[in-house]
Length: 226
Image 1 (cartoon, rainbow, N blue to C red):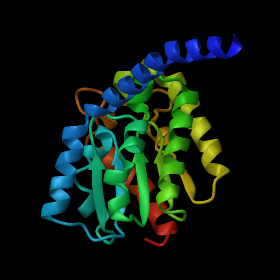
Image 2: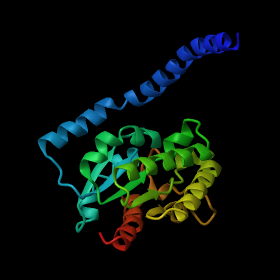
Image 3: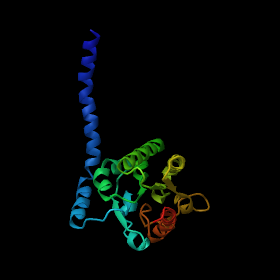
Image 4: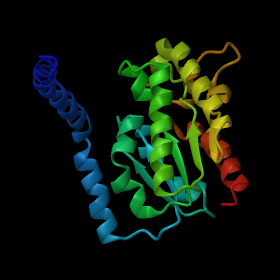
């Protein structure tokens, strides 16, 4: 009787589990065109292994001056706007593994919080990304650029602070994982977001914002021997 009851529960649960898996797949499927475009570019112009891989959401995607900002470092931009941390993990076999990066710089988490993820969820997703990247290359250095205090997302500031603090503590406990604090210098003396770093939308950064980021990321790259 107990065996029959268990079997019935399994039959009831299987469609629900399948639906959950399908929903997760659909969440990531919206980026298939972006990932396919990256792969087409790789076929047309195969990148040499060993570049510093910049990956994440629109703040990476729009960082179009990487080559001139880091003239002594080979860089590769694989940002896709609107993405979340778990999207980078999901597509890592296609946009991390092939490049054999010498280091990885990630910016994401901004959209995650906006879409309702908790700071703890942001941390868990970053931990999952680290595990995936380390499964591909156990020694690759990984940097997490702090979630920026954007004017447009001022309402999320407390959650941004909490997520950054969690990631910072985690990174401090992991060899080769670093938290890069762009959050603090982007705040005003009143502890609030400043429009000086952003375009008119209050979300995406202007050149001044990227100059600040270049200094923070550049110091880390120097420290890792790049």
